Length: 206
Length: 94
Image (cartoon, rainbow over all chains, first blue to last red; front, side, top):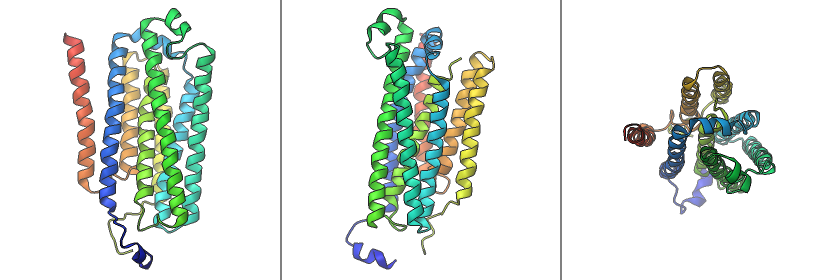
């Protein structure tokens, strides 16, 4: 394409950036993998307490957030298609929707954590330490660490999507240099992937 | 566009996958409502595995990428399963 001629001095290797992103995603998967490992051992050792503690969680909010993340994953995946079809407006629109859904997810999380705080449940709170069993304390510890770390990833993902929007608007990310958008998409799907496992493990304990 | 490596995924594919993912989410909620005891955890996790397979294959474009990326992803998940199995071998038989 002609419009890449003035960018020739900028090194660009779509495949290398993709591999780099995947290698980073592997470290993220193993980071959460370690936490899932801790979760499975503690749940195995305290099945009753995990069952009891999970009653505190609101399955409806969890399910709503799951569906929201799945929809946002689709919109960002679609934006890679629209970018390749050179539909800049549609790409920016889809990314804006992705960001809005991500923020709604965080707002839901805020209210969900707020309810726990109102009940006096937060890591190291007196109510938690005095009135709950060891297994329940472990459950809530894992709940706050894992959903908190996941929410942190949502925030980072949103920042990367904003960066992609800015670069698309400036024209430095386009159909022939789509790596930034594709990597933003990969990161966002990773966040979705982790939530796909967090949801049944925390909200769907029977 | 002369490059063949850029496979353009049609919107239809993404919509079908989203519908499947949402359906699987509600199926996993449904299965935990039924009294299956220990099997309901297994059921919900199997649904989660199918969902993550769909996300990896279609949303993360593994289906359209070169095969070696798929192999690397499979290796990382296999590594996690190995560590999980060895951890539980320890806890179950110590």
